[in-house]
Image 1 (cartoon, rainbow, N blue to C red):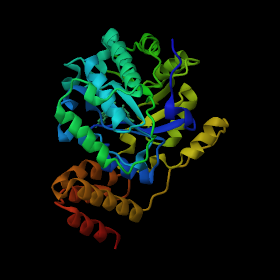
Image 2 (spheres, helix red, strand yellow):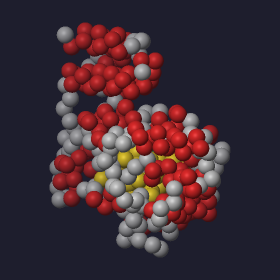
Image 3 (cartoon, helix red, strand yellow):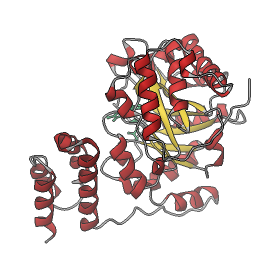
Length: 370
Ligand SMILES: Cc1cc2nc3c(=O)[nH]c(=O)nc-3n(C[C@H](O)[C@H](O)[C@H](O)COP(=O)(O)O)c2cc1C
């Protein structure tokens, strides 16, 4: 087994607290808001299809937009054909990401039907071939090979060069360095097989393995099994690969308890961060508690209604600025979360989802706090 190359992961304080990738949620605008107000240690893009990427559709390239504020930022990709991952790895390197993450955990039919996502748990040989291919691509890219040397569509090269122009002001190393590659997965397909699955993945030495504590079959039902995540952490001990636990975290207090119980190197927070970018705020306290074995609480951040509404407007305005007023409705999946967990939130939420533009939303929220 080779020693994992950790890249930026090496420099992060432990335990690591990251924002989980969520397709349709953690787009550029959402990530910028979370980065400004929560500052998780790492952010991931929404997953991007490695095969689709080669046709260079604007929609997929939009998913690979990022800003300096989000660093370190990891591009997440999914698919099933190793050769597609080779090209995707080149694109991710060229666009200046800090890492590449391979999705082996998505349970959605449209992904698993084509042997991608969590289906790869049942296809370990292909899963390992994908990781090896990403590593080979990284080596070839560092060795000086260019996208132009690959058999890809001119449209793809154009889209990548355009992306680089847009990222021109984002500082990045001048020389070519390999990116750490990582895997995000689940506990198993229909039963928990994490012990053998982790051992399999470790043979290719990923920098991190993020584990959502459910099987594919469970989808999002039941509770995440952190005991099984803990078993995986035990198996990975000494390998150099970091284990990040994931599933059902709604506060850093809970994260602190679960990290101490399971022995993971860090956590990913997904749904608990929707409409709640502040969730990451007290991670320095969490680190003190965990690293010094203190029997203390990690307090939740105290957010006033005014502050909450200001942030909602910041999110809505940024969305309008970046994607245009016609995309206004996409704020609503965030609004339903922002507008909950405070007294009388329900009627306000019902009105907010009826608003048609940023101005209507502003008028509504101002009425409440005036
Ligand atoms: C709407 C939604 C979209 C998701 N999209 C992705 C994705 O693109 N890539 C991925 O690896 N996981 C994805 N996930 C799974 C989450 O990253 C995470 O593993 C899961 O939600 C469990 O963590 P949580 O309980 O903290 O939300 C998604 C989850 C949700 C709810």
